[in-house]
Image (cartoon, rainbow, N blue to C red; front, side):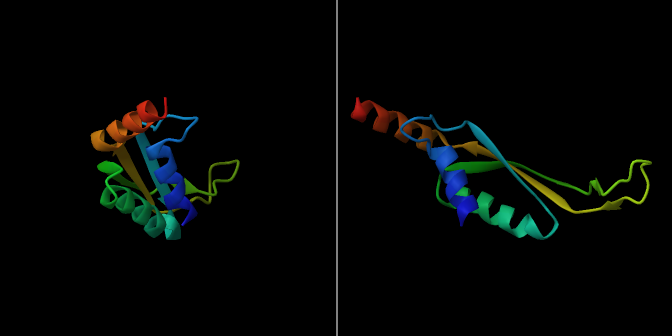
Length: 97
């Protein structure tokens, strides 16, 4: 999916940009399975390690008076780039020089 490719690009880096040290993938409600897929795929592919997982139930749709709010499930995955992936990027960059 687009989300998976985007996360992989951030973690692998490009010719113009170095890989990120970490990435946070979060989702609300029905999008939580998609975020879980992205996070676990990055770990399966050896690009990152899931270092933290949080859940929340933030209020949504508050009116100006702060009433009529309802909650929505939220999941937050914190990913840390792997040393092997960062080393591979550095080697590829050195080879191109």
